[in-house]
Image 1 (cartoon, rainbow, N blue to C red):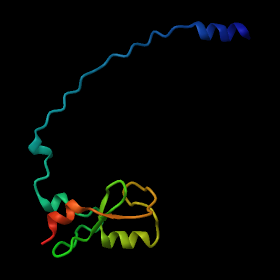
Image 2: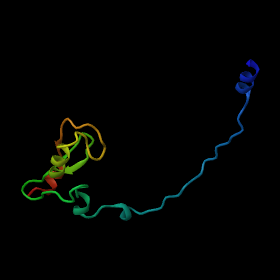
Image 3: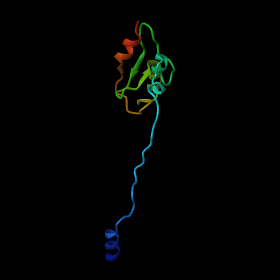
Length: 102
């Protein structure tokens, strides 16, 4: 039995890993979000209350969701609907609020 394990430990692998180059071609205009509506649309409710008060909150990981969706989701689950991290608190997103407040 010792001979089998000794043989396995002394074998050398002839597997070669050959790197390949993949060219990804795109222009900035192809991936740039140029519409505020697209950029800040809630993933679940499809809108934010924008006007005098921007109504959206984020988890600790920064996932921004409208307040209505958070309220509805947190009635039954205590995690982020995007990253599934437990929710102990939500925070305001000052950049979002400043961008969309009147």
